[in-house]
Length: 229
Image 1 (spheres, rainbow, N blue to C red):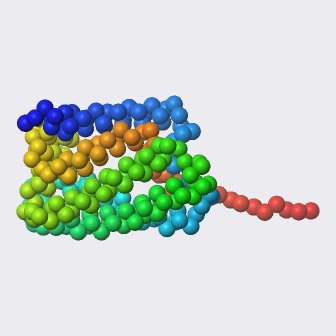
Image 2: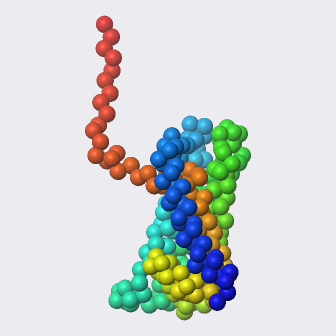
Image 3: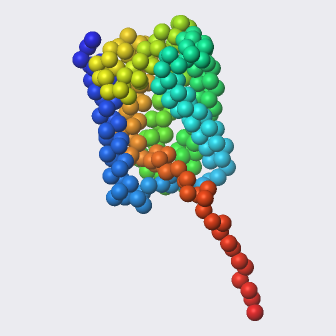
């Protein structure tokens, strides 16, 4: 096993998660006024509505699929009667559907942010960079479907599952060894995904961590008309 593989897939992921955690905590503690999605709906709403809904639905489903698919132990899948070949077909089909839905929405949002003068004027460099990073990561994920189609035995998928599960159990060498022989497109997808963790606390992506739980239990706002005498 090469040292580069150990650094890229055994050590770098922990560095990325550590930076993400510390920088996110620091930003929330010291710069709460910057903790927002910076909505530009008032500047332009038509393209935003067309792109935002498919983008968010697609990316949420893709992330949920990654989380469940990678971190659920193989024994659980076998207990449920789902073998590796079937699981890979499900991952390819569902990932493809929701990945394309996300890509459709993302393309609209990127065009809107780059071509609408008002939206572009209020966009920071990081707003554009993070959108492009997400686009690259999504394209890598969709490209991996074509690679998976050439080997439907689920072998590389099992290696990626092993990498993820060894990563969360802090087995650095086992994680790096698990991913060593997978196709380069998967490696690039994983590496770029970890890089997004580093970009997370420095971008508008932090709004993901602000789920408005209290909103559902809040009191209704009472609005009264002013009584004119």
